[in-house]
Length: 108
Image (cartoon, rainbow, N blue to C red):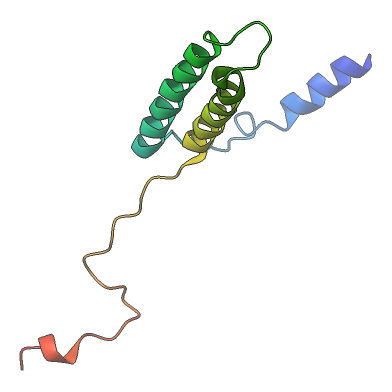
């Protein structure tokens, strides 16, 4: 038996479906709404950077030649930040069970 067939055969024997186990769904994290807004701002900044790049002179000695690389690289950084930006946490209305109740709010 070849190595590929051995690996495939051993992988099939250990699968949880054949052994009667349940498959666990893989949980994917989606991009948050704040992340999408940040990515959108990054795309607009990228368009601005490439628009500025179109204004450069052939020798590369004007303001657009100096500014456009920073706009483009900054836009890529903003897009990357938007991908990893977590969803903002909402404050809890009920205190956790480990904290004692506020004595001034008790009705006795």
